[in-house]
Length: 60
Image (tube, rainbow, N blue to C red):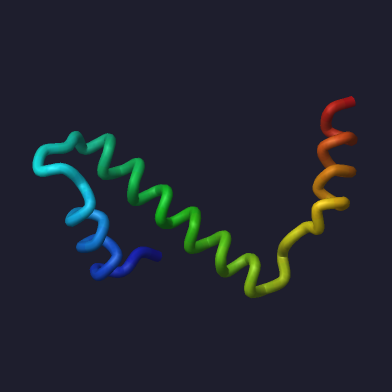
């Protein structure tokens, strides 16, 4: 979930005029980053070797 403070920062970083698509893209990016941080804190990550192995399996 995105806080009002995060939205304020996003809005301040955008140019004076912007499209709704640009705003939505920024909001989605922040949400995905926040979720990734939480996953890391919960230990839901892969080592480099594990990621390489998964990539090899998916590439077959």
